[in-house]
Amino acid sequence: MLNERLSWDGPRALALGLLILFALGPAALRGADEKKTLGLFAPWAATAEISYVVTGGNTETSAFSLGTTFSRKWAKDTLLFKSYILKSNATTTTRTAMGTETDFEVFESSVTRKVAENYLFAGQYDRNITKRFTGQAGLSWDRNRFAGIDDRVIGTVGLGYAWIDKERTKVKTSAGLTYTLRQYVGLEWESFGGLRFTASLDQKLWETSSFASVFVLDENLKDSPDWRFDWTNSVAASISKGLALKVGLRTLYTHQPALQEIPLYDLGGEPTDLTVFVPLKKLDTFFTTSLVINF
Image (cartoon, rainbow, N blue to C red; front, side, top):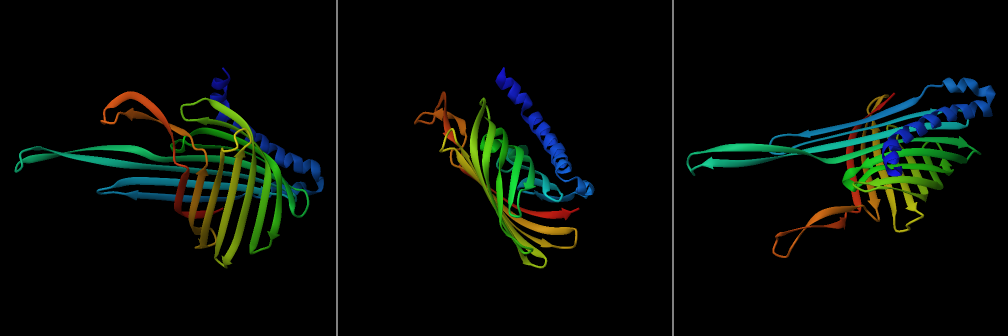
């Protein structure tokens, strides 16, 4: 009964948590500083990153990715929402001939299958404690079925520190506690507490270009070999005030990946009607070239 409730409530719990985060951020600010109430009506900052690639002819593939960020800042508070969607399909065409060597007809059959699918939705609320220290709370949901992750919800709370906070260079780190609800494909839900460490760098290269790097390390306190990191590096170059081109490389490493069930054959190549479980690959990489729209 608990597993049924979790499988139904996972995405809804995330949505509810994000709504609470959205509501409590401004409310906390109002209670903390009534004199700056006008700051609540400051505009949101928003960006969208869009990438779409299609190939045709002998090879047919399509890949689409969309990333968005929405942020709002007050005197001491920052509220951030972000999302990422990646889908990729590949079409395999099989050709056969029927007839004689000199008189035949060619038949084609095509099968399209999904080769990549990745979703991420997250929200984070930051509160400035001092000029350099911040308190942080966040909630996220992600899915990557090709890496064995059907659903994963992570709640975080921690402290951040700004080592360098200049116009051209920003270096920040944070550390905190996490609580994870996770369901591998075909398995039951599990939950555990953990630790998270984050490091980020924003460096302005020239007047119209910049480099950004974000590294996130998660560790499972219940099972120490179960740790992973998410490392994203990107370079962006402005085309105009509202448009930019961005090249990014995202690296996902899971030290203890999910298991995949595969059929077992005997030494002669005959099926045994048995299956075995083998680990998926530890490393996933995503290379994207996208158009960035700044609102």
